[in-house]
Image 1 (cartoon, rainbow, N blue to C red):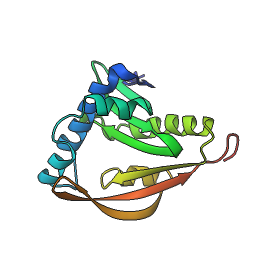
Image 2: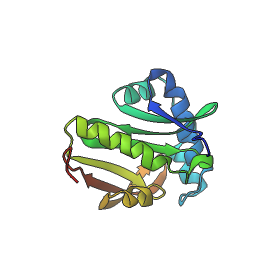
Image 3: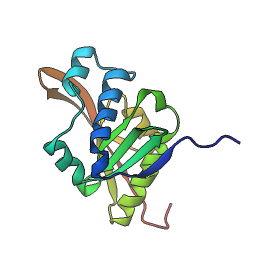
Length: 163
């Protein structure tokens, strides 16, 4: 029997810097539909500092640890918004997305949310779609001097005990 190498837990302020490193690693080193200039505009460096701490501090965050470091995280902001969903390249395809999303959905339901929504990158869109999110809108956003395609997606949640 193979042991699960991952620990999934709720993150706190002490994790913020490590979460920024996950963003940077996923964006800059993972498989991508974006070119290098777009990736650099999206994540020139790992996010950190007061603004990063404030943004994360207002959200509920699921973090996944492998021995020695955080390899993924997903966050729930207000009104059912999934603000962050990042997994380091070496942990992609390991089922972590589904496990994190299940925890986020559970927390959203407990808070009385009836819908989750997200602005998904081209890389994240298939994962969200595979878990019941529907396309609402395709859009192109400007980050720095680059244009990046993404989409808004949503998923309606069944009330507890239904579905």
